[in-house]
Image (cartoon, rainbow, N blue to C red):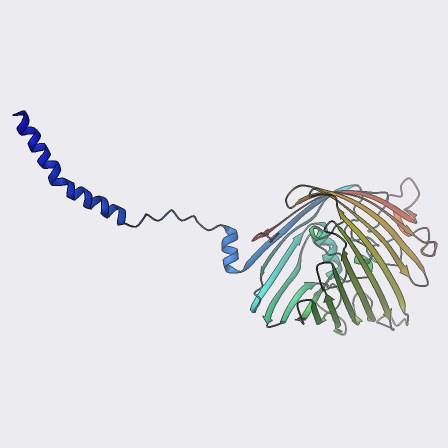
Length: 396
């Protein structure tokens, strides 16, 4: 009986072996199961759509022995400093968000909204109201071949510094930035990429800084060019001219601006910004006057290593026939993490005797002194934290 059982078992094994072999071959020939597909990230979606999203956040503590952002002279309605005007104060300098769809060919657009103290200063120049939220830029774009046209509101092409604090090397803005150069324009601008190294542009705007024109509806023309023959050197030239019905009471206003950049090494960059500004004509006030203001700003930016850098700025601003201003700024910055930087800045401003010893407002409260006090110099210190991001991430 035992042997009969063994024979029966062997017969069963022999019978099923071909089927097992066929099943194994079929399993080997079957396609492998597809791996689980990961959901696309935000950067992947934005990249696929051709949309860019970026933003910045800057906050600071600022202390000054005076109020350089307040007008203590006939030079400007907001004094000679832009944005850094609060005395002994913590400040939300700027929170900004930019969204763009800007294809190399076809129709696109760009929107840039900011909030904070920078928005207040910018909005004040636009309509006299210091609102805490401002649309810094909003324009349509059309690109075809080497030409790009934008129409709407956009930042100026003049100057070495910009409104966005994340794109500057210092906490405070230069004298040239606030006193000689426009901030934004509303109009239309066309840029022609002549070659890989040369761009030229021209535009027509309502004027300097305001979105809608008043008075006679005069326009301001802009012309400029940039030349970057290599990664070491670049030069930009920009000019604005036209009658300004708001800021200068209908006088003719012109500006010629130059910015040169020289990358001495991968760690050391030198920059020079030169401005030549003129106002002339009777204007709406009926007073025939011509004034010239020239300014020069030099920058030395040095990266010590991946975490530390130093920026030095020196300026000379000449109110021709009246007097001059000068200033020196030292900024030391530390970056503990990618896209985040902490800046410490010390700045000193000095007015010449031609501008008077009462150029800078020193104290507002006159209860102890019998009235506001003034001085011919100003010293300030600031600490600022700046964070910025971009989606998709910017290429290294």
